Amino acid sequence: MSVRMPAQSFAPEVRTHGDLKFYRNACRYATREEAEASALELQSRWMMVTDTRATEAYEQPNYRFDMSLNRSVRLPDEPESIALR
Image (cartoon, rainbow, N blue to C red; front, side, top):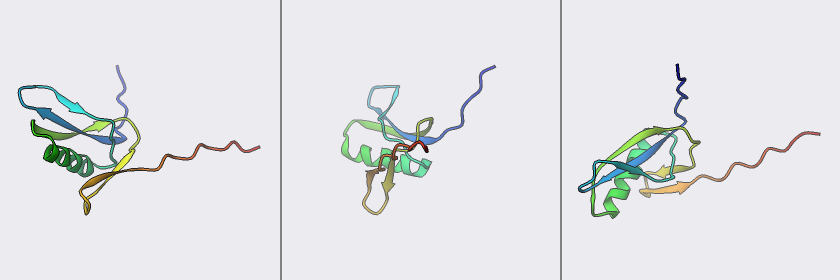
């Protein structure tokens, strides 16, 4: 029996004309809404995109989508933990 990890983020995916496969980039968002908005924004810049979606991902979120600017914003890297002595 395999144990499925819970999703930690959402990934935007696009499909292009003549292709059955969806493709994703390295952007991960905290919400499905952000990932869907990111995929739609990408579609507005790419001529061959025929479909978009957001799927569950297992990486930590590394972007947020600013709805007012209609663009992705990289989240700051988390500081490395400092061991207490």
